[in-house]
Image (cartoon, rainbow, N blue to C red; front, top):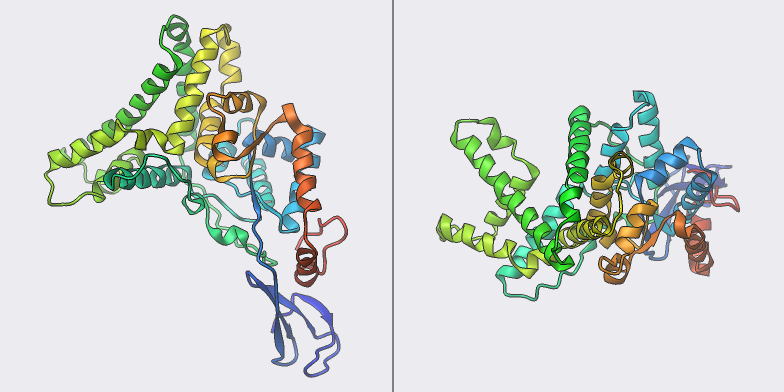
Length: 405
């Protein structure tokens, strides 16, 4: 038996310094001997970790070490993860943003991604497009069943329950990144340019805030249906690759079609999906709810005089769509979310108010001391049973809780 951390002599065969911890298995520690078959299981208490989302600005800042506040906070986050109080999974949006990192070579980008994975303990959120699709499908099923439109978040839609286990000494890493980075950069630059170009029209708009929300939701629904229509057109034109290479948004519509009876006509099925996209059930899905209100809030800020300089607006909002995707995809499933000041201002606006709606605490440099106090409170709330579990599972941890497995 491979002993990872030697504790002393074997109680079975008496072998000197042959007995110790083999592995941590979710809710117990397996101990065994390197010389004989003697082994025991030490039970560990059930735990429920806090889920923290660290936005890209924080992770890249901590990695570069350009701001001591980020580097020190990253160490404190790591301590909380080693103490099994916290998990900070990475996401597909982190990977996209890391590989678009301009001015850094491939090695630096790989190092940043490894840094992000180390803080996460290897845990990852489901890809943002999956979270979005799961939400819409669940909302659609509630719509079909005539259930209330209120959306109840299910943590499993965004992350595996494995995050709430005691961690083993090693983590598996699946490497590889297969997205066209240059295409992502081009699309990002183009989308931000189109956003800022729309500001002149926004400034003269007489729409109310609620009307702006309705416009955003209408555009979202249209994007799904248009994408599906284009996908079908490609197939009809003989593009066989389209059969296996649909867009994410067309796949959402396909998932909705799968929820409907094959006995209904195509016209009836699409009419049902159309009614859903115009319903409160679709509007209440967290991704739609958050992104529509964030965009409507930005519109209101522009109407009131924000971002008068185009070049500064392009610079300040360069990561806007990624930031919205971070928050809209994952904030409802987290206990806390660290983001930049501009995005924190938007999601904390009472008209968005993700903390009040989803219970997620929003931290930025504007309330940095509150973030540090939140971390401190996690450690202060540790039970004696939890502390005993730490001693049993991780005998190598020192008083700082920072010694790596």
